[in-house]
Image (cartoon, rainbow, N blue to C red):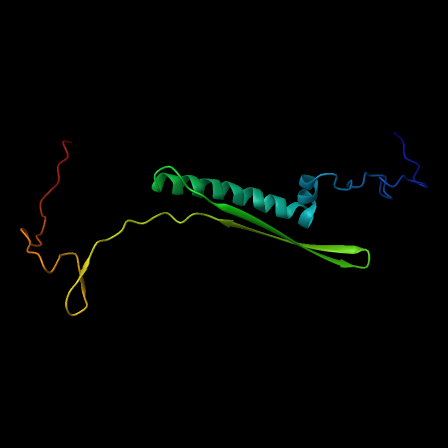
Amino acid sequence: MLIDPENPPSSYAADGKANVPAANTFDMFIRMLEDGEFNREMTEEMRTFASDLANAAIISGGKAKGKLTISLDFALDGRVTEIASKYKFDVPTPKRPKSIMWQTEDGRFTPNNPHQGNLFGAREVRGERNFGN
């Protein structure tokens, strides 16, 4: 289609190239934010998030939850709308094992029950390990 440079339609710029169309869907809108940088960054972060979520699930027995929060702040000044976009991924913190300890009478912690005797005391493990190789 030839374009009359003296009278271009509104969907074309003065140089004859097509303008970016107005967003018809939310995904088109997201791709326009920060000239596409917001979408690019989120796509990279989503891959990292997916990996972190999978690792958390492995550590915690097969289940993990995460969260993505997108924040869009709109400010209208005359006919111009300024949009500030933010996002935040919340990755689950892997569960750590618990420790069982008792308190001594003077307020210190010990892995040994002070009201119960022990069969074996602390010992040193020495020697070369051979696992059948």
